[in-house]
Image (cartoon, rainbow, N blue to C red; front, side, top):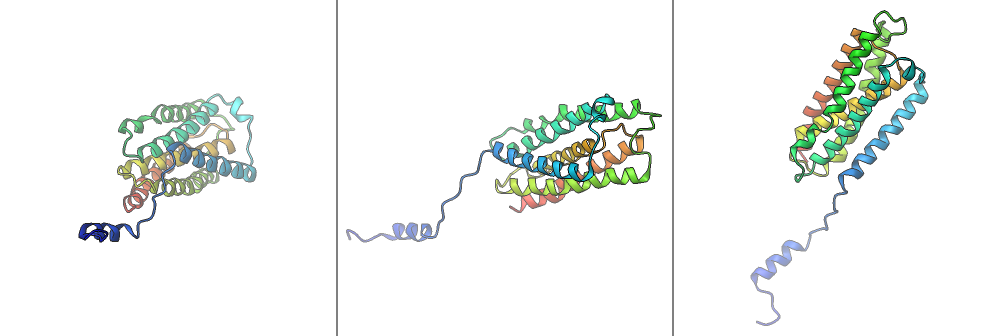
Length: 216
């Protein structure tokens, strides 16, 4: 009969009656910019609370490259994480932070070697090593959680890799804050603790954050 819906039309109308419009995802660069803004705010707050000696960035030749490397690693790992949260981006984006990570690591080790015997070397006492651990863990955990929450809405298929990159970005950002607060060459012990903290943050982010992203 004319004007009366058939069975298929009625079924379609019933299924679509409760549908809500889907909000379009913002471009990845907006997420990166917002996350980096949070990093800058956190760094400014911690620097204001803990203070720092910016002269050390110039007086000790390997400190500034370490700062540049860790800051670049944080930014580039964040870019990789937000890009790989989208299914149309190539896996090769995961390699984007690698050069910055190499600069960060090499500068830390070179500074450790160059500072051997220097009374201004950082990490000679248990209190200084604990301060290193506290800053890296304390800053990287909320930053990693923030990145994971921001990325989750994209429902990434490569959840483990995305979560790992988010952890790397957060650990590198925390290391940048540490260098700003304590711009000194490090001892072998401090570099070892630094490395262990970063590895722990990245691993925890990959495991815990990856599970959180998988459940999205």
